[in-house]
Length: 290
Image (tube, rainbow, N blue to C red; front, side, top):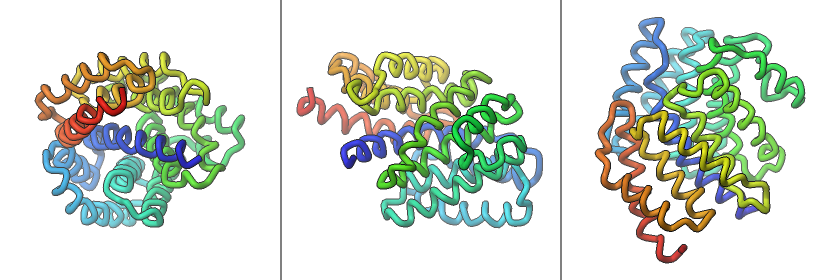
């Protein structure tokens, strides 16, 4: 269990940083408060200094809480809050108890957002599987932002609770959510759902249920839909699929491409900066693995 938890947590930490920080600035604005959140989120994802983001994020999160307290049924703000709390807990929080607390808050925001989006989806995380699947299948494109936010936040909550077998059992529901996102619009957030699907398919070896070739297809779709701007997609492809299949050529090619790429890209600069750091670490350790 410890091996599984460590692998899943490390992989999903990277994937959620890649997806969440790239996504927050895309939330639609329909009020002064939400416009301000979009502008601030835009500033975050286009910052090339992760340390600065880490230092400033708590104040931003407190501001979000304040805005939501004034407008508790603002679906777009709840969606953004869930994504940002998920990212902050995963990337910057190392204390286990605090991580669980923040992940729970993110999931609460996401659950409230999806319920506001579609009443059939209220209490979605508590429904028996058949009812859960029926509710997810019935959602339409109007629910895409809230649905994606729920998948990201729920994933973060699961990985903050890897010591709880019941939490791990919910992983298949994340896959159902992201498959629904793809069904509704595979290009949503530059194919971000495919990154989740690729990770879910490859963080376990085939003997334990992993599906590496399916994961390969998902990662390539994510890269194509982001037009190569999302450098973390290549890092995850190398870290999970290439290492699992012992494909040193693919592994080194993907990571070399990341290091050679310009990390500055609208909406991706922060995570691309982190991706380049991860690519160097993986390349430096390649001889020890292959």
